[in-house]
Image 1: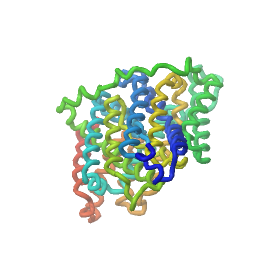
Image 2: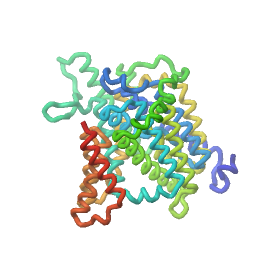
Image 3: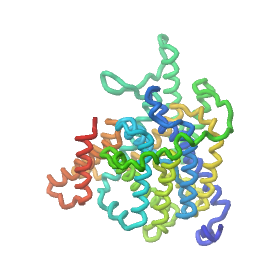
Image 4: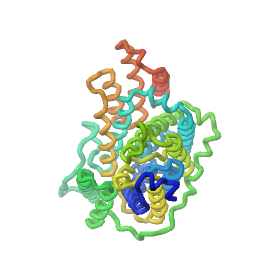
Length: 456
């Protein structure tokens, strides 16, 4: 094991790698609660929840996908990088593909599988670099930032901090008590205040660079909620994991239906899954490897293996029943703790397997508990806006539309479409049409068709 993971060459040992693996797990353990919450449509009206998979099955799929993906990265990529269903991609799955576009969740899983299969093929060839170079850097940053704002908006809405308004569309929720409130309104205020507490606590923990800030924030918020009677106490701590039967292999029923799989709607869904995962995975792998000092001449060691590991994890996750599994930037927490090899990922993968048996604890994970995690993840993703060339209007305007339209239309795909349509138009009218890659012109027509024929 020491020889395979090159302990001596990288100056590490079992103790340091084990601590790093546990640290990474704690930093990203929040996904075990947040992903089932989002994919099961837990925050949607009761009449819509029948259109989504079961919470318990999604939990099991999430834990298994994270474990398998991380172990694949450990033994194939040999990097201290953990994987799990990605934030942003799960929001697109639930709120855009299923809720807005009306695609059955089983079909959306098929879209995840197809996108990850394409990603695998691209990872094993030289096509990846060509595609990366075809998309303007500003739009890449804008997509990530826009998803961040969208996720944060969902978190604030779920907690009741932001509510609907006939006069202004949205407004600040009720954060104070009044004598004429009924029991439901009082509970809504308590939940909103609990979410505000959790958000401030998590932000402070992040500011103080606590490695497992999001996870710790959720745990403390849940405990405070139980103390004040806002969150119900769990009935037990350890139990047999929920059955995977409701989601396992559900994607297969659509993989053989080519008329559905290659419909215009599905092409948009597959492209969005592929696009976001493609650049998110590449950026995360480079960022984490750079912090660990593993880059050689600015390049990943065994880049094909690392990217293939990410794609394989996504395919496995789709079969299990979850949205795209991808590399996690929280792996930097483990790297900061000394992780340098894939053995740290072995430890993280084992931790996800053990977590399967603690499903009963998720009963304390309410909307108020998950909201701070969604907002903080949104903050981290929105930081990419700093990289956009705001002084150049032909770069800034498409990027701005991409960021703005995602939360306002409640659709990640609509935000991407807005940016990818306006970018070539402005460049051409400015006389810079030759600077636009041919791929971007092709995407212009794809997304124009999306707005004309697919938007209801």
